[in-house]
Image (cartoon, rainbow over all chains, first blue to last red):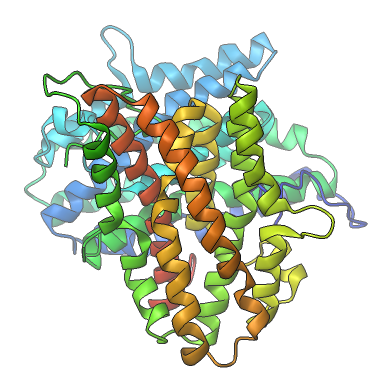
Length: 254
Length: 254
């Protein structure tokens, strides 16, 4: 494991290497190969997609994941705030609109609130973030802070877990209605909506990444950034595993 | 649980309340009562202080906790950077010096490196942060970012877990030599050093907190800040529990 992970301390933007740069195709393949660490493989997610979680755990996941949903447009605003190029901002601002919505097209946050209602979580309960576990909050905040403190190209690279997202959404659409018949059908709007949006966003994020990181040291740095983002998603599920599978939420024993 | 927790999203600096302010003594007692959630009560810490962790787990704790140690002076520099009062800075800068050291008095980070060597971790291994778990990194970074984005008084309040630190250090000094005879005696310098420093820092941090947060809404806000800091410490041990007790570090199954 010699990934250059952009942690806040010990930050190393590019470690010199004598190795030649990957071609554009090799670099993209290297990034795509990191799907093996996507949170679709986390044990919490495996249980969830095999229909093995109880209602409390499903609700816990929906409520905790909502903190990530509301973070996305804030993160994307941080990306815009670091980007001096009008053309990039014109394109990137669509991500904010996708989540926050506009009149008549209420967007991803509203769709997630509908998912909440479909699993029995009143929207006031979701909006209060009362169920958000500290470990989830710290991981999501790390993603926001990364976007605040990095270049817009590095932040674009960190969004590339969207390469792996259509599969995870499709699998939920395929399997949840059978496993969790108690979830109301309106709950699935978000996953369906993201199938096409994620595919479109990937094209743009990938283009920026492949154009920006061209030496091998820079490409290694990009791999480290994507690893950081995979860590964010995996760590969120670790906290949910502790709370809803091990039944050890913070302070459970005091 | 109606604590006003200063999470990055859904930040509520002071929720109005009709309740009267606590007296200075009641407020201090309320803050001190939060010791019941200090990480000394975490199951990982209970195992550690009962001599029940193996060498790998002790080393894991030392290596992960080192990320917190090196974060402290960075956090304190953020506090100084938000403080316009020379008198406060003159006092607070001592915390940076305590950790970073000066010629002849090498400070807390050096003492922790000696602890690392005493448990069999070469200093280069500690300094590389190669053993730091993502969940630990995100929790520690949350503490740094809280200090960056809050007022210096709020950051001072967040340091008040030091009220509970002398007990935890003393207990290690009392019990580890018996339980872990393989740890070299130079390892204990850090804990001994912090016994007096923590007591001195608490006086200052507590004075700032009791002087600043005077209405009940502000006092509730201070309680929320201390809760946030307790969450940081607890969540660090959750990540170590997953990795070293459950043997489920990130990506263990892929």
